[in-house]
Image 1 (tube, one colour):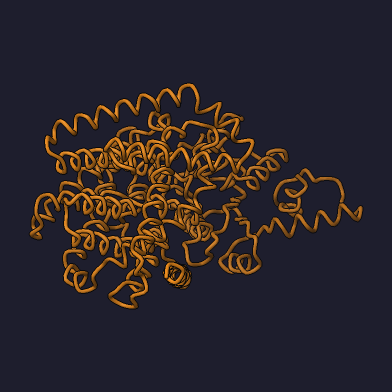
Image 2 (cartoon, helix red, strand yellow; image 1 turned 180 degrees about the vertical axis):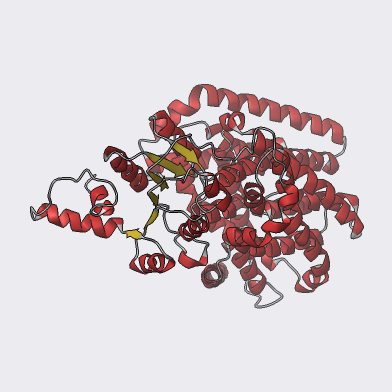
Length: 574
Protein backbone atom coordinates (compact mmCIF):
# COMPACT_ATOMS: atom_id res chain seq x y z
CA UNK A 1 0.00 0.00 0.00
CA UNK A 2 2.83 2.36 0.97
CA UNK A 3 4.68 1.58 -2.26
CA UNK A 4 1.56 2.37 -4.28
CA UNK A 5 1.17 5.71 -2.50
CA UNK A 6 4.83 6.55 -3.06
CA UNK A 7 4.46 5.67 -6.72
CA UNK A 8 1.42 7.91 -7.07
CA UNK A 9 3.25 10.81 -5.43
CA UNK A 10 6.17 10.31 -7.81
CA UNK A 11 3.81 10.34 -10.81
CA UNK A 12 2.16 13.48 -9.46
CA UNK A 13 5.45 15.33 -8.98
CA UNK A 14 6.63 14.20 -12.42
CA UNK A 15 3.41 15.49 -14.00
CA UNK A 16 3.78 18.83 -12.20
CA UNK A 17 7.36 19.21 -13.36
CA UNK A 18 6.41 18.40 -16.96
CA UNK A 19 3.50 20.83 -16.81
CA UNK A 20 5.79 23.50 -15.30
CA UNK A 21 8.34 23.00 -18.09
CA UNK A 22 5.63 23.41 -20.72
CA UNK A 23 4.14 26.44 -18.98
CA UNK A 24 7.58 27.97 -18.53
CA UNK A 25 8.30 27.54 -22.24
CA UNK A 26 5.10 29.40 -23.08
CA UNK A 27 6.05 32.13 -20.61
CA UNK A 28 9.47 32.54 -22.22
CA UNK A 29 7.85 32.80 -25.66
CA UNK A 30 5.64 35.58 -24.30
CA UNK A 31 8.69 37.23 -22.64
CA UNK A 32 7.14 36.77 -19.22
CA UNK A 33 8.93 35.97 -15.93
CA UNK A 34 8.56 32.37 -14.82
CA UNK A 35 6.69 33.48 -11.68
CA UNK A 36 3.63 34.22 -13.82
CA UNK A 37 3.94 30.93 -15.70
CA UNK A 38 4.36 28.82 -12.54
CA UNK A 39 1.38 30.38 -10.74
CA UNK A 40 -0.69 29.72 -13.87
CA UNK A 41 0.57 26.12 -13.82
CA UNK A 42 -0.55 25.82 -10.20
CA UNK A 43 -4.03 27.07 -11.10
CA UNK A 44 -4.23 24.60 -14.00
CA UNK A 45 -2.96 21.72 -11.84
CA UNK A 46 -5.24 22.63 -8.93
CA UNK A 47 -8.69 21.32 -8.12
CA UNK A 48 -10.41 24.03 -10.14
CA UNK A 49 -9.04 22.64 -13.45
CA UNK A 50 -7.09 19.36 -13.80
CA UNK A 51 -6.86 18.32 -10.15
CA UNK A 52 -3.31 16.97 -10.47
CA UNK A 53 -1.87 18.64 -7.35
CA UNK A 54 -3.23 16.56 -4.48
CA UNK A 55 -0.20 15.71 -2.31
CA UNK A 56 -0.38 18.94 -0.37
CA UNK A 57 2.02 17.87 2.39
CA UNK A 58 4.84 17.00 -0.01
CA UNK A 59 4.32 20.06 -2.21
CA UNK A 60 4.17 22.33 0.84
CA UNK A 61 7.40 20.84 2.19
CA UNK A 62 9.22 21.72 -1.02
CA UNK A 63 7.54 25.14 -0.96
CA UNK A 64 8.77 25.86 2.58
CA UNK A 65 12.27 24.78 1.64
CA UNK A 66 12.15 27.12 -1.35
CA UNK A 67 11.09 30.06 0.82
CA UNK A 68 13.86 29.27 3.31
CA UNK A 69 16.52 29.15 0.58
CA UNK A 70 15.17 32.37 -0.94
CA UNK A 71 15.39 34.19 2.39
CA UNK A 72 18.88 32.80 2.98
CA UNK A 73 20.00 34.21 -0.39
CA UNK A 74 18.34 37.54 0.37
CA UNK A 75 20.27 37.68 3.62
CA UNK A 76 23.42 36.72 1.75
CA UNK A 77 23.03 39.84 -0.40
CA UNK A 78 22.50 42.13 2.60
CA UNK A 79 26.12 42.98 3.21
CA UNK A 80 25.84 45.62 5.92
CA UNK A 81 28.73 47.54 4.39
CA UNK A 82 26.53 48.15 1.33
CA UNK A 83 24.04 50.04 3.48
CA UNK A 84 26.68 52.68 4.26
CA UNK A 85 27.45 53.14 0.56
CA UNK A 86 23.85 53.68 -0.57
CA UNK A 87 23.38 57.03 -2.21
CA UNK A 88 20.94 59.55 -0.81
CA UNK A 89 18.74 59.16 -3.88
CA UNK A 90 18.33 55.40 -3.35
CA UNK A 91 17.51 55.75 0.35
CA UNK A 92 15.23 58.77 -0.02
CA UNK A 93 13.37 57.45 -3.03
CA UNK A 94 13.16 53.92 -1.66
CA UNK A 95 11.73 55.05 1.68
CA UNK A 96 9.45 57.56 -0.05
CA UNK A 97 8.03 54.88 -2.31
CA UNK A 98 7.47 52.53 0.64
CA UNK A 99 5.68 55.19 2.71
CA UNK A 100 3.57 56.38 -0.24
CA UNK A 101 2.52 52.89 -1.30
CA UNK A 102 1.75 51.80 2.27
CA UNK A 103 -0.33 54.88 3.10
CA UNK A 104 -2.36 55.06 -0.10
CA UNK A 105 -2.65 51.28 -0.39
CA UNK A 106 -4.11 51.18 3.10
CA UNK A 107 -6.67 53.86 2.20
CA UNK A 108 -7.61 52.02 -1.00
CA UNK A 109 -8.09 48.82 0.99
CA UNK A 110 -10.39 50.54 3.47
CA UNK A 111 -12.30 52.13 0.59
CA UNK A 112 -12.85 48.67 -0.91
CA UNK A 113 -14.34 47.39 2.33
CA UNK A 114 -11.35 45.45 3.66
CA UNK A 115 -10.83 45.48 7.41
CA UNK A 116 -7.92 47.48 8.81
CA UNK A 117 -5.61 44.50 9.43
CA UNK A 118 -6.11 43.10 5.92
CA UNK A 119 -5.71 46.58 4.44
CA UNK A 120 -2.35 47.15 6.12
CA UNK A 121 -1.16 43.68 5.08
CA UNK A 122 -2.13 44.30 1.46
CA UNK A 123 -0.62 47.79 1.50
CA UNK A 124 2.72 46.52 2.82
CA UNK A 125 2.71 43.65 0.30
CA UNK A 126 2.35 46.20 -2.51
CA UNK A 127 5.62 47.92 -1.53
CA UNK A 128 7.90 45.00 -2.47
CA UNK A 129 9.40 44.86 -5.96
CA UNK A 130 10.94 41.74 -7.45
CA UNK A 131 14.74 41.68 -7.33
CA UNK A 132 14.85 38.66 -9.63
CA UNK A 133 12.69 40.25 -12.33
CA UNK A 134 14.30 43.70 -12.24
CA UNK A 135 17.87 42.43 -12.33
CA UNK A 136 17.02 39.99 -15.15
CA UNK A 137 15.32 42.63 -17.31
CA UNK A 138 17.98 45.30 -16.73
CA UNK A 139 20.74 42.78 -17.43
CA UNK A 140 19.07 41.74 -20.69
CA UNK A 141 18.95 45.40 -21.72
CA UNK A 142 22.56 46.01 -20.60
CA UNK A 143 21.32 48.71 -18.20
CA UNK A 144 22.29 47.15 -14.89
CA UNK A 145 25.27 49.57 -14.63
CA UNK A 146 23.41 52.62 -15.92
CA UNK A 147 22.48 55.41 -13.51
CA UNK A 148 18.82 54.44 -13.32
CA UNK A 149 19.83 50.78 -13.01
CA UNK A 150 22.04 51.52 -10.03
CA UNK A 151 19.33 53.60 -8.40
CA UNK A 152 16.91 50.70 -8.93
CA UNK A 153 19.34 48.34 -7.20
CA UNK A 154 19.45 50.85 -4.35
CA UNK A 155 15.63 50.63 -4.15
CA UNK A 156 15.90 46.88 -3.85
CA UNK A 157 18.34 47.05 -0.95
CA UNK A 158 16.08 49.50 0.88
CA UNK A 159 13.09 47.23 0.23
CA UNK A 160 15.01 44.16 1.41
CA UNK A 161 15.76 45.92 4.68
CA UNK A 162 12.09 46.83 4.97
CA UNK A 163 11.19 43.17 4.33
CA UNK A 164 13.37 42.17 7.27
CA UNK A 165 11.75 44.75 9.55
CA UNK A 166 8.22 43.84 8.42
CA UNK A 167 8.78 40.13 9.01
CA UNK A 168 10.26 40.77 12.47
CA UNK A 169 7.20 42.82 13.43
CA UNK A 170 4.92 40.21 11.87
CA UNK A 171 6.54 37.38 13.81
CA UNK A 172 6.28 39.32 17.07
CA UNK A 173 2.60 40.07 16.46
CA UNK A 174 2.01 36.41 15.64
CA UNK A 175 3.62 35.31 18.89
CA UNK A 176 1.63 37.80 20.93
CA UNK A 177 -1.68 36.89 19.32
CA UNK A 178 -1.18 33.13 19.53
CA UNK A 179 -0.29 32.80 23.20
CA UNK A 180 -1.56 33.80 26.59
CA UNK A 181 0.51 36.53 28.18
CA UNK A 182 1.29 37.81 24.73
CA UNK A 183 3.43 40.77 25.78
CA UNK A 184 5.62 38.64 28.02
CA UNK A 185 6.03 36.10 25.24
CA UNK A 186 6.93 38.84 22.75
CA UNK A 187 9.51 40.20 25.18
CA UNK A 188 10.99 36.73 25.61
CA UNK A 189 11.20 36.22 21.84
CA UNK A 190 12.87 39.59 21.39
CA UNK A 191 15.34 38.68 24.10
CA UNK A 192 16.12 35.38 22.39
CA UNK A 193 16.48 37.25 19.12
CA UNK A 194 18.94 39.71 20.66
CA UNK A 195 20.96 36.82 22.07
CA UNK A 196 20.99 35.08 18.70
CA UNK A 197 22.07 38.30 17.01
CA UNK A 198 24.93 38.63 19.47
CA UNK A 199 26.08 35.06 18.77
CA UNK A 200 25.86 35.63 15.01
CA UNK A 201 27.76 38.93 15.36
CA UNK A 202 30.58 37.09 17.14
CA UNK A 203 30.54 34.47 14.37
CA UNK A 204 30.80 37.18 11.71
CA UNK A 205 33.55 39.01 13.59
CA UNK A 206 35.84 36.10 14.37
CA UNK A 207 34.90 32.94 12.45
CA UNK A 208 32.96 33.61 9.24
CA UNK A 209 35.73 34.79 6.91
CA UNK A 210 38.51 32.33 7.90
CA UNK A 211 36.06 29.42 8.06
CA UNK A 212 34.54 30.14 4.66
CA UNK A 213 37.98 30.70 3.12
CA UNK A 214 39.01 27.23 4.27
CA UNK A 215 35.77 25.62 3.09
CA UNK A 216 36.06 27.35 -0.29
CA UNK A 217 38.86 24.93 -1.17
CA UNK A 218 36.14 22.28 -1.53
CA UNK A 219 33.19 23.96 -3.32
CA UNK A 220 30.82 21.02 -2.69
CA UNK A 221 31.52 21.20 1.05
CA UNK A 222 31.06 24.97 0.95
CA UNK A 223 27.55 24.62 -0.44
CA UNK A 224 26.72 21.82 1.98
CA UNK A 225 27.87 23.96 4.90
CA UNK A 226 25.83 26.94 3.67
CA UNK A 227 22.66 24.87 3.43
CA UNK A 228 23.34 23.23 6.79
CA UNK A 229 24.04 26.57 8.44
CA UNK A 230 20.83 28.01 7.02
CA UNK A 231 18.83 24.99 8.22
CA UNK A 232 20.40 25.17 11.69
CA UNK A 233 19.57 28.84 12.22
CA UNK A 234 16.12 28.39 10.68
CA UNK A 235 15.38 25.54 13.09
CA UNK A 236 16.78 27.55 16.01
CA UNK A 237 14.68 30.55 15.02
CA UNK A 238 11.57 28.39 14.90
CA UNK A 239 12.38 26.85 18.29
CA UNK A 240 12.93 30.25 19.89
CA UNK A 241 9.67 31.55 18.48
CA UNK A 242 10.56 34.07 15.82
CA UNK A 243 10.17 31.82 12.81
CA UNK A 244 12.10 29.68 10.36
CA UNK A 245 12.05 32.50 7.83
CA UNK A 246 13.92 34.98 10.00
CA UNK A 247 16.37 32.29 11.09
CA UNK A 248 17.22 31.52 7.48
CA UNK A 249 17.49 35.22 6.67
CA UNK A 250 19.87 35.74 9.59
CA UNK A 251 21.99 32.81 8.38
CA UNK A 252 22.42 34.57 5.05
CA UNK A 253 23.30 37.89 6.69
CA UNK A 254 25.96 36.15 8.78
CA UNK A 255 27.77 35.05 5.59
CA UNK A 256 27.13 38.23 3.57
CA UNK A 257 30.44 39.87 4.47
CA UNK A 258 32.57 36.84 3.48
CA UNK A 259 34.46 36.85 0.17
CA UNK A 260 32.73 33.67 -1.03
CA UNK A 261 29.16 34.91 -0.80
CA UNK A 262 28.85 35.33 -4.57
CA UNK A 263 30.03 31.76 -5.09
CA UNK A 264 27.44 30.46 -2.62
CA UNK A 265 24.69 32.57 -4.17
CA UNK A 266 25.53 31.39 -7.68
CA UNK A 267 25.55 27.73 -6.68
CA UNK A 268 22.27 27.95 -4.74
CA UNK A 269 20.37 30.03 -7.32
CA UNK A 270 19.25 26.98 -9.31
CA UNK A 271 18.16 25.16 -6.14
CA UNK A 272 16.19 28.25 -5.10
CA UNK A 273 14.44 28.47 -8.47
CA UNK A 274 13.59 24.75 -8.45
CA UNK A 275 12.14 24.79 -4.93
CA UNK A 276 10.26 28.06 -5.46
CA UNK A 277 8.53 26.36 -8.36
CA UNK A 278 6.63 24.32 -5.78
CA UNK A 279 5.77 27.43 -3.77
CA UNK A 280 4.15 29.03 -6.80
CA UNK A 281 2.44 25.79 -7.77
CA UNK A 282 1.16 25.39 -4.21
CA UNK A 283 -0.04 28.98 -4.27
CA UNK A 284 -1.78 28.62 -7.62
CA UNK A 285 -3.39 25.30 -6.74
CA UNK A 286 -4.83 26.76 -3.53
CA UNK A 287 -6.64 29.54 -5.37
CA UNK A 288 -10.34 29.26 -6.00
CA UNK A 289 -11.15 30.48 -9.50
CA UNK A 290 -14.59 31.67 -8.44
CA UNK A 291 -13.02 33.71 -5.61
CA UNK A 292 -10.46 35.11 -8.03
CA UNK A 293 -13.24 36.18 -10.37
CA UNK A 294 -14.96 37.99 -7.51
CA UNK A 295 -11.69 39.77 -6.64
CA UNK A 296 -11.01 40.92 -10.20
CA UNK A 297 -12.30 44.47 -9.67
CA UNK A 298 -10.31 45.23 -6.49
CA UNK A 299 -7.25 43.48 -7.93
CA UNK A 300 -7.31 45.64 -11.07
CA UNK A 301 -7.64 48.78 -8.95
CA UNK A 302 -4.64 47.80 -6.79
CA UNK A 303 -2.71 46.80 -9.93
CA UNK A 304 -3.38 50.19 -11.56
CA UNK A 305 -2.17 51.86 -8.37
CA UNK A 306 1.09 49.88 -8.45
CA UNK A 307 1.65 50.27 -12.20
CA UNK A 308 1.00 54.02 -12.22
CA UNK A 309 1.37 55.30 -8.66
CA UNK A 310 4.71 53.71 -7.79
CA UNK A 311 6.57 55.03 -10.87
CA UNK A 312 5.04 58.48 -10.42
CA UNK A 313 6.12 58.84 -6.79
CA UNK A 314 9.67 57.77 -7.73
CA UNK A 315 9.64 60.23 -10.63
CA UNK A 316 8.39 63.03 -8.34
CA UNK A 317 10.96 62.39 -5.60
CA UNK A 318 13.88 62.13 -8.03
CA UNK A 319 12.71 65.27 -9.82
CA UNK A 320 12.64 67.15 -6.51
CA UNK A 321 16.18 65.92 -5.81
CA UNK A 322 17.44 67.40 -9.09
CA UNK A 323 17.37 64.47 -11.54
CA UNK A 324 16.08 64.70 -15.07
CA UNK A 325 12.66 63.30 -15.89
CA UNK A 326 14.20 60.62 -18.09
CA UNK A 327 16.32 59.15 -15.29
CA UNK A 328 13.39 59.30 -12.86
CA UNK A 329 11.01 57.70 -15.33
CA UNK A 330 13.32 54.80 -16.20
CA UNK A 331 14.10 54.17 -12.52
CA UNK A 332 10.44 54.45 -11.55
CA UNK A 333 9.33 51.77 -13.99
CA UNK A 334 11.34 49.20 -12.05
CA UNK A 335 8.97 49.44 -9.06
CA UNK A 336 5.82 48.98 -11.16
CA UNK A 337 5.21 45.44 -9.93
CA UNK A 338 4.99 43.42 -6.74
CA UNK A 339 7.26 40.49 -6.01
CA UNK A 340 7.42 36.94 -4.79
CA UNK A 341 8.01 38.41 -1.33
CA UNK A 342 4.56 40.01 -1.46
CA UNK A 343 3.05 36.55 -1.82
CA UNK A 344 5.29 35.07 0.89
CA UNK A 345 4.37 37.95 3.21
CA UNK A 346 0.65 37.40 2.66
CA UNK A 347 1.00 33.62 3.03
CA UNK A 348 2.69 34.17 6.39
CA UNK A 349 -0.18 36.41 7.44
CA UNK A 350 -2.66 33.70 6.48
CA UNK A 351 -0.72 31.07 8.46
CA UNK A 352 -0.78 33.32 11.54
CA UNK A 353 -4.52 33.84 11.18
CA UNK A 354 -4.21 37.58 10.66
CA UNK A 355 -5.81 37.70 7.20
CA UNK A 356 -8.19 35.41 5.29
CA UNK A 357 -7.21 33.19 2.37
CA UNK A 358 -9.11 35.54 0.05
CA UNK A 359 -6.57 38.30 0.80
CA UNK A 360 -3.78 36.05 -0.46
CA UNK A 361 -5.79 35.39 -3.61
CA UNK A 362 -6.31 39.13 -4.10
CA UNK A 363 -2.58 39.93 -3.82
CA UNK A 364 -1.74 36.96 -6.07
CA UNK A 365 -4.01 38.34 -8.78
CA UNK A 366 -2.42 41.78 -8.36
CA UNK A 367 0.96 40.11 -8.74
CA UNK A 368 -0.03 38.32 -11.94
CA UNK A 369 -1.27 41.56 -13.52
CA UNK A 370 1.56 43.86 -12.40
CA UNK A 371 4.39 41.43 -13.16
CA UNK A 372 2.99 40.66 -16.61
CA UNK A 373 2.39 44.31 -17.55
CA UNK A 374 5.51 45.81 -15.96
CA UNK A 375 7.71 43.31 -17.79
CA UNK A 376 6.69 44.90 -21.07
CA UNK A 377 6.91 48.39 -19.56
CA UNK A 378 10.55 47.83 -18.54
CA UNK A 379 11.39 46.02 -21.78
CA UNK A 380 10.11 48.89 -23.91
CA UNK A 381 10.99 51.64 -21.41
CA UNK A 382 12.78 53.92 -23.88
CA UNK A 383 9.97 53.73 -26.40
CA UNK A 384 7.42 54.36 -23.64
CA UNK A 385 9.40 57.37 -22.47
CA UNK A 386 9.45 58.79 -25.99
CA UNK A 387 5.64 58.60 -26.08
CA UNK A 388 5.11 60.13 -22.63
CA UNK A 389 7.94 62.67 -22.57
CA UNK A 390 5.72 65.72 -23.33
CA UNK A 391 3.63 64.93 -20.24
CA UNK A 392 6.52 64.44 -17.81
CA UNK A 393 7.94 67.97 -17.71
CA UNK A 394 5.94 68.78 -14.56
CA UNK A 395 8.16 66.35 -12.61
CA UNK A 396 11.42 68.04 -13.60
CA UNK A 397 12.86 70.76 -11.36
CA UNK A 398 16.13 72.25 -12.55
CA UNK A 399 18.35 73.09 -9.55
CA UNK A 400 20.72 76.05 -9.57
CA UNK A 401 23.80 73.92 -10.01
CA UNK A 402 22.29 71.93 -12.86
CA UNK A 403 20.75 68.47 -12.94
CA UNK A 404 22.57 65.82 -10.95
CA UNK A 405 22.63 63.51 -13.95
CA UNK A 406 23.86 66.21 -16.33
CA UNK A 407 27.07 65.41 -18.12
CA UNK A 408 30.02 67.62 -17.28
CA UNK A 409 31.94 67.39 -20.52
CA UNK A 410 35.46 68.79 -20.39
CA UNK A 411 35.86 72.08 -22.19
CA UNK A 412 37.83 71.88 -25.39
CA UNK A 413 37.81 70.72 -28.98
CA UNK A 414 37.81 67.05 -29.94
CA UNK A 415 38.52 65.14 -33.11
CA UNK A 416 36.49 62.07 -32.11
CA UNK A 417 33.86 61.07 -29.57
CA UNK A 418 33.71 57.36 -28.64
CA UNK A 419 30.42 56.18 -27.14
CA UNK A 420 30.95 53.03 -25.06
CA UNK A 421 34.20 52.42 -23.17
CA UNK A 422 34.05 48.65 -22.83
CA UNK A 423 36.93 46.42 -23.90
CA UNK A 424 36.50 47.23 -27.58
CA UNK A 425 35.60 50.89 -27.21
CA UNK A 426 38.33 51.67 -24.67
CA UNK A 427 41.03 50.10 -26.86
CA UNK A 428 39.71 51.85 -29.95
CA UNK A 429 39.85 55.17 -28.10
CA UNK A 430 43.44 54.42 -27.06
CA UNK A 431 44.38 53.68 -30.69
CA UNK A 432 42.87 56.98 -31.83
CA UNK A 433 44.71 58.89 -29.11
CA UNK A 434 47.91 57.15 -30.15
CA UNK A 435 47.30 58.36 -33.70
CA UNK A 436 47.24 61.94 -32.44
CA UNK A 437 43.48 62.53 -32.21
CA UNK A 438 41.86 64.35 -29.29
CA UNK A 439 39.25 61.87 -28.04
CA UNK A 440 36.30 62.27 -25.67
CA UNK A 441 34.99 59.02 -24.21
CA UNK A 442 31.35 58.50 -23.19
CA UNK A 443 29.92 55.69 -21.07
CA UNK A 444 26.83 55.11 -18.89
CA UNK A 445 28.79 53.23 -16.21
CA UNK A 446 29.99 55.76 -13.59
CA UNK A 447 32.82 53.44 -12.50
CA UNK A 448 34.15 53.20 -16.06
CA UNK A 449 34.13 56.98 -16.38
CA UNK A 450 35.85 57.30 -13.00
CA UNK A 451 38.62 54.93 -14.08
CA UNK A 452 39.10 56.86 -17.32
CA UNK A 453 39.42 60.11 -15.38
CA UNK A 454 41.98 58.49 -13.08
CA UNK A 455 43.98 57.54 -16.19
CA UNK A 456 43.96 61.15 -17.35
CA UNK A 457 41.54 60.56 -20.24
CA UNK A 458 38.73 62.97 -21.08
CA UNK A 459 35.46 61.13 -20.52
CA UNK A 460 31.93 61.87 -19.47
CA UNK A 461 29.05 59.91 -17.95
CA UNK A 462 25.92 59.70 -20.06
CA UNK A 463 23.49 57.63 -22.09
CA UNK A 464 24.08 57.58 -25.83
CA UNK A 465 20.38 56.97 -26.48
CA UNK A 466 19.32 60.17 -24.67
CA UNK A 467 18.91 63.01 -27.22
CA UNK A 468 19.15 65.68 -24.50
CA UNK A 469 22.50 64.32 -23.35
CA UNK A 470 23.89 64.07 -26.88
CA UNK A 471 22.90 67.68 -27.58
CA UNK A 472 25.07 68.86 -24.66
CA UNK A 473 28.28 67.29 -25.97
CA UNK A 474 30.98 69.47 -27.57
CA UNK A 475 30.39 68.20 -31.11
CA UNK A 476 31.57 71.26 -33.02
CA UNK A 477 34.61 70.32 -35.08
CA UNK A 478 34.36 66.60 -34.23
CA UNK A 479 35.35 64.55 -37.27
CA UNK A 480 34.17 61.14 -36.07
CA UNK A 481 31.48 59.92 -33.69
CA UNK A 482 32.16 56.26 -32.96
CA UNK A 483 29.57 54.09 -31.19
CA UNK A 484 30.75 50.77 -29.72
CA UNK A 485 27.71 50.24 -27.47
CA UNK A 486 26.92 46.48 -27.56
CA UNK A 487 23.82 45.32 -29.36
CA UNK A 488 20.96 43.91 -27.32
CA UNK A 489 20.49 40.17 -27.14
CA UNK A 490 16.84 40.60 -28.08
CA UNK A 491 17.63 42.55 -31.24
CA UNK A 492 15.01 44.80 -32.70
CA UNK A 493 12.46 44.15 -29.94
CA UNK A 494 14.21 46.88 -27.92
CA UNK A 495 14.99 50.46 -28.82
CA UNK A 496 18.49 50.13 -30.22
CA UNK A 497 20.67 52.82 -28.56
CA UNK A 498 22.89 52.94 -31.65
CA UNK A 499 19.99 53.88 -33.90
CA UNK A 500 18.82 56.41 -31.30
CA UNK A 501 22.30 57.97 -31.29
CA UNK A 502 22.37 58.04 -35.09
CA UNK A 503 19.03 59.87 -35.18
CA UNK A 504 20.17 62.32 -32.50
CA UNK A 505 23.37 63.19 -34.34
CA UNK A 506 21.56 63.64 -37.66
CA UNK A 507 18.94 65.80 -35.94
CA UNK A 508 21.72 68.04 -34.58
CA UNK A 509 23.15 68.47 -38.10
CA UNK A 510 26.35 66.78 -37.02
CA UNK A 511 28.95 67.58 -39.69
CA UNK A 512 31.34 64.72 -38.95
CA UNK A 513 31.09 61.07 -39.90
CA UNK A 514 29.47 58.33 -37.83
CA UNK A 515 30.95 54.87 -37.25
CA UNK A 516 28.99 52.14 -35.42
CA UNK A 517 30.14 48.70 -34.30
CA UNK A 518 28.01 45.60 -35.05
CA UNK A 519 28.65 41.90 -34.56
CA UNK A 520 26.07 40.44 -36.94
CA UNK A 521 25.74 40.92 -40.68
CA UNK A 522 22.00 41.60 -40.48
CA UNK A 523 22.53 44.31 -37.88
CA UNK A 524 25.38 45.82 -39.92
CA UNK A 525 23.11 46.00 -42.97
CA UNK A 526 20.40 47.69 -40.92
CA UNK A 527 22.83 50.29 -39.58
CA UNK A 528 24.16 51.03 -43.06
CA UNK A 529 20.61 51.45 -44.33
CA UNK A 530 19.91 53.85 -41.44
CA UNK A 531 22.73 56.10 -42.59
CA UNK A 532 25.90 55.07 -40.73
CA UNK A 533 28.99 56.22 -42.64
CA UNK A 534 31.03 53.24 -41.46
CA UNK A 535 30.04 49.96 -39.79
CA UNK A 536 32.79 48.29 -37.78
CA UNK A 537 32.61 44.51 -37.47
CA UNK A 538 35.18 43.65 -34.78
CA UNK A 539 35.04 39.86 -35.01
CA UNK A 540 35.18 39.72 -38.82
CA UNK A 541 37.93 42.35 -39.06
CA UNK A 542 39.95 40.75 -36.26
CA UNK A 543 39.69 37.34 -37.94
CA UNK A 544 40.81 38.78 -41.27
CA UNK A 545 43.76 40.56 -39.71
CA UNK A 546 44.65 37.47 -37.69
CA UNK A 547 44.73 35.44 -40.88
CA UNK A 548 46.98 38.08 -42.49
CA UNK A 549 49.40 37.83 -39.59
CA UNK A 550 49.46 34.02 -39.70
CA UNK A 551 50.15 34.12 -43.44
CA UNK A 552 52.78 36.84 -43.04
CA UNK A 553 50.79 39.36 -45.04
CA UNK A 554 50.17 41.88 -42.26
CA UNK A 555 52.04 45.12 -42.65
CA UNK A 556 53.17 47.39 -39.84
CA UNK A 557 50.51 48.79 -37.55
CA UNK A 558 49.28 52.07 -39.06
CA UNK A 559 49.40 55.24 -36.99
CA UNK A 560 46.93 57.28 -38.97
CA UNK A 561 43.62 58.80 -38.12
CA UNK A 562 40.33 56.96 -38.40
CA UNK A 563 39.72 58.14 -41.97
CA UNK A 564 42.52 55.99 -43.35
CA UNK A 565 42.46 52.20 -43.63
CA UNK A 566 40.19 50.01 -41.54
CA UNK A 567 39.74 51.21 -37.93
CA UNK A 568 38.29 47.90 -36.79
CA UNK A 569 41.25 46.01 -38.26
CA UNK A 570 43.72 48.36 -36.56
CA UNK A 571 41.92 47.85 -33.28
CA UNK A 572 42.12 44.09 -33.68
CA UNK A 573 45.92 44.22 -33.58
CA UNK A 574 45.63 45.36 -29.98
